[in-house]
Amino acid sequence: MTDMKRTWKPGNMVYPVPAVLVSVGRESGETNMFTVAWVGNVCTDPPMLSISVRQERYSNDFIEENGEFVVNLTTEKLAWATDFCGVRSGRDVDKWKECGLTPMKASELSYAPLIKESPVNIECRVSQRLELGSHIMYLAEVLSVHVDEAVFDETGKADLAAAGLIAYSHGEYVKLEKTLGTFGYSVRKKPKKPKKSKKKRSE
Image 1 (cartoon, rainbow, N blue to C red):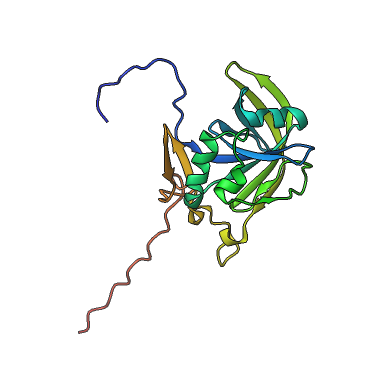
Image 2: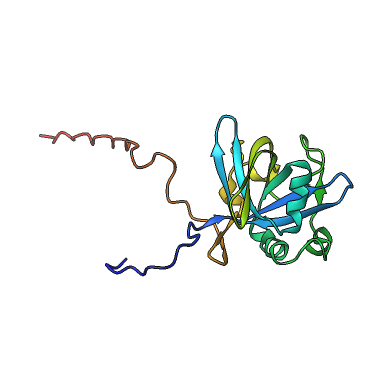
């Protein structure tokens, strides 16, 4: 880093953000999926998250109708599909067919499906709706989480890093692959090295 800073106009610069696909559905049986850049955790108990959606998005009407959606985490293998679902509208194309993805029945929701190929699916029901200008923010309670068996290691621990998760950073998709530390490592005491025993010199 240098001592110099460039000043830009106000804008959204919290990057990277999760690259997620949000799936939605209607009572008619129609389903769709789309990308959301603005997604985040809100509360632990009850578990809640938020997504912010432009009002003109086709999928926004689905959420307005029934207040439910699924947040699906994406991987390196899903990068192309993620981008496609962000630049093409469900009004014009069948994204499931074009992307070769598979809708799965959710356990707690009535209309929004899971994306089978996603390693983690988070079922959500809207609890609060906030109009904030260009976007509507939906605060939602997490009703159920589904994790693919392939994500678990031999000890039974979910190894999300090995799943090849991707993030979105200022117009680019990036892979999350290098672990720099684990939570609390900055204050964790290092194990003491065993003292070397002094050998007695033979007379």
